[in-house]
Image 1 (cartoon, rainbow, N blue to C red):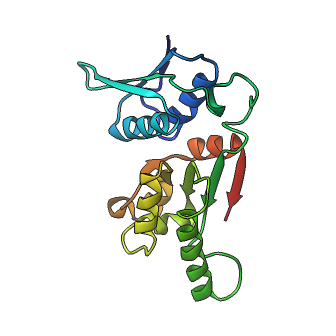
Image 2 (cartoon, rainbow, N blue to C red):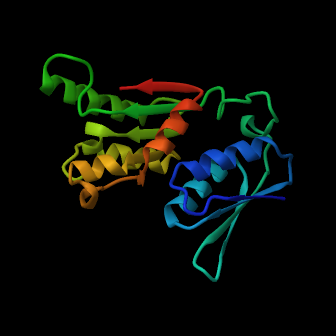
Image 3 (spheres, rainbow, N blue to C red):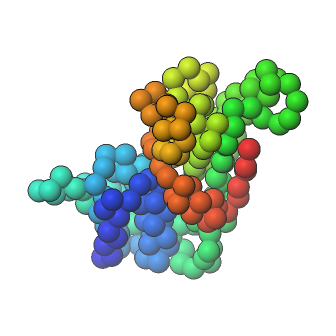
Length: 200
């Protein structure tokens, strides 16, 4: 059994490191991830179940959590080093840094981005990560017309993360409606290790 200490680390870092460890292990083996927040527990559990693995949760006396993932299926995430260097050769990360898509008319750009996010709920495979930063933070907060579509993606297993510094800058932290708060290091690492990256 391998234990990964991710205490104090924001999402999606616990998920990224758990996926790396799972690729190093065989059927029946267990990877245990130590985390200290409910969002990390939820995201780890969704990731593991989406891959067909068994998940068990233990709450520690100090309030932290042990998420034990036992490999039940040898899918692309657990076939050794064939995809070393990427989370997955088909892993899709979508990074959104603004409220509109393309250049030109602002109203049209906002409409196009709303349609794009809706389209992500219909395409296969679903993105594994949606990252929002700078002006993109407005899309995960109160007043956004994309909240329902983003929630639908979360229910399908997508991890939705918004830059905390960006939420603070725009005074939006108390208005976050969907997903979790992350930092730029986690955003950069997720983008760097993407199998496929869409940057808007």
